[in-house]
Length: 348
Image (cartoon, rainbow, N blue to C red; front, side):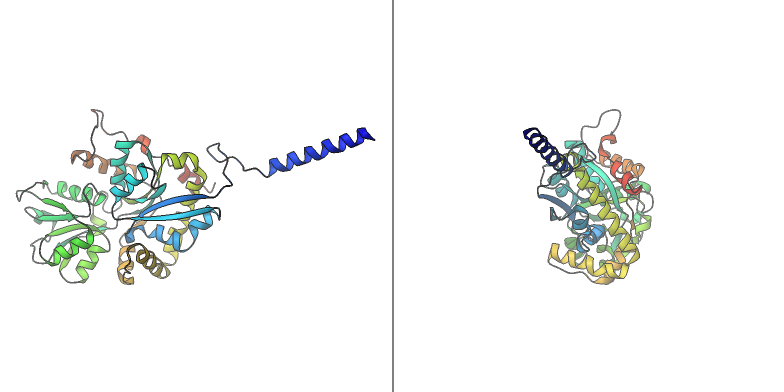
């Protein structure tokens, strides 16, 4: 009888052990177990309509649904990509939407950031002030041209435009002078005749044209590289977040895919979502027609054109924004981790 009791006790212990094993977290794709503890994911983005996939992913609940109820999402809005990239490299942001040029610059400095996916291509225009005498890129000689921030993707596109026409960037009127200012300040400066033209992400160019004091000199689908088909907004992650939470990074890519699908299938329902998120980020709403114009001036895609990235990187090197490049040129191989994107696209 004692013997049977011992066997019964051992059986109970074995069953409990098996049940405990079944209830443990399954290993993630990086070999680590997914924690059952609550976690906060810090997502960075820019306060631009060109980041519409991020806005929709937030407002439609795609991010929360994909990440799970155990994850708290903190959204941080930035005015420019340089600040966002620095915040990511220093651990203040885990993953986010940003332009490629600031990411390349930061990668060369810190080597602790990865490009995971695209969000949209294109979405910037060259707008010229009425009365400036600028109707084409060649007319920019001797003029003052604004870009949102130094080293931005928009500045790289502007420099490529100038190269195509044999124009040089200078500090005097012998060439083209470039000045960095926030798009809202550029709008005011153009009203006051202080700048001649600007290469800006939408909807700023359209807004300047609609208000009657500027004209679009180069449409979005003519902006280099690749005539508007270049990465303007991409998804990037810190190395630490990708290493520790690869499953969550993939969930964010899936939410981005959900958002892109929604925007394409329901554009009219998208405008209010984007406007609401912009109002939360900036305190100001935006006319639905301007949001509509912006979305019609870009291509939503998760793909990354690495050749276009290489072209933009070389311009950044030539402009002096990327330092310490050896004789063999800039090596961007370690900047990418597109394995999660591949899994997402293959439905794995």
